[in-house]
Amino acid sequence: MKFCSDCGSEVEFKIPDDDNRPRYVCTSCKTIHYQNPNIVAGTLPIYENKILLCKRAIEPRYGYWTLPAGFMENQETTVEAASRETLEEADAQVQNLRLYTVISVPQIDQVHIYFLADLVDGKFGVGPESLECQLFAEENIPWDDISFPTVKKTLKLYLKDKQRGQFDTHVTDIIREPREVSFPVYKFKAS
Image 1: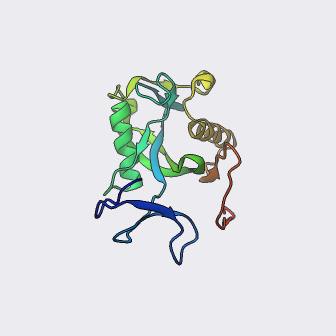
Image 2 (image 1 turned 120 degrees about the vertical axis):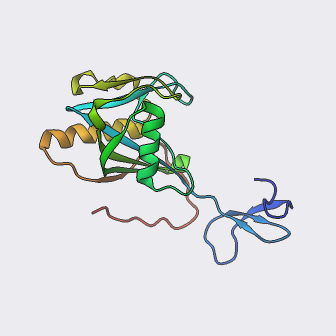
Image 3 (image 1 turned 45 degrees about the horizontal axis):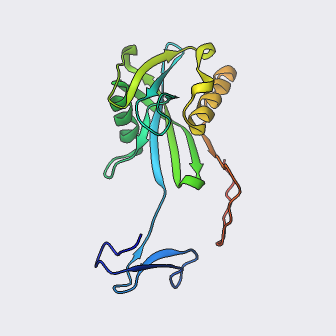
């Protein structure tokens, strides 16, 4: 960020008074421009013990398989975002959404939220962001062509939970590389 979106003056990257991390601060009007993680919301749609996956028609990871998901829009809930993304990417309606995974990916400033969902009547198509969509039995999941670590982790958790017959909500992280942190990091134990 180079200029203030409020007044157009230059900004500087510094730790504001009474804060603990660097922010973009306007040199003129003193507005602090907070930057927060983006939320990706999606579904793990199930129909007759098969999982609906979409082959991406956009970058990043063009041509790789993913769960239908995308960035939340302002003024919508996580359930609305997950349902909308499923409709947009797979031309599919889902119901009975249950929170399934919440995966923090701090190195790219994102939180991925997936809901376990029932695919309505097993009907789906192909949306503009997908090359194709397909229902996969467990033994046919294209593991080498899964798009993102959060998708792979969600799928593996689902298959493990399916095997034991109990579906819990999973809160976890994907940390790809060590990172230097110059502010306090608070660790909370997941329940």
